[in-house]
Length: 120
Image (spheres, rainbow, N blue to C red):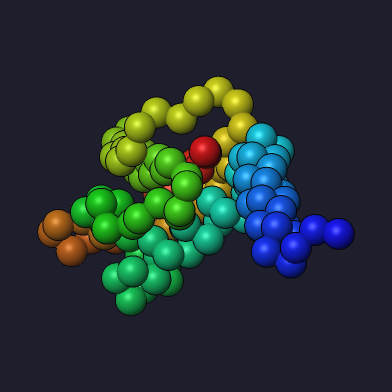
């Protein structure tokens, strides 16, 4: 019969091994970013300045990417576009676009579109 100390040490090693195995599997089988993640970032952008419909190009710099994600924000108005963040890869990207009012420095508000792209 083995001593209780040896059994506890063995059990500790089994638990550590299972924890490492589970962590490795989580990293390997992560699901690709969803449109819902990108939609949540767009919601954060719109609520950052207290407005739910108007964005300025400067607001793009205030949004933080979700943990373990990279982020690209693009704001388009007619023939002008502002972008923040690295260029996204061609696959496994969560994308959300929506119309927004774009506030100019002179006080005018025009319609534009914000596109949020997230990936790991």
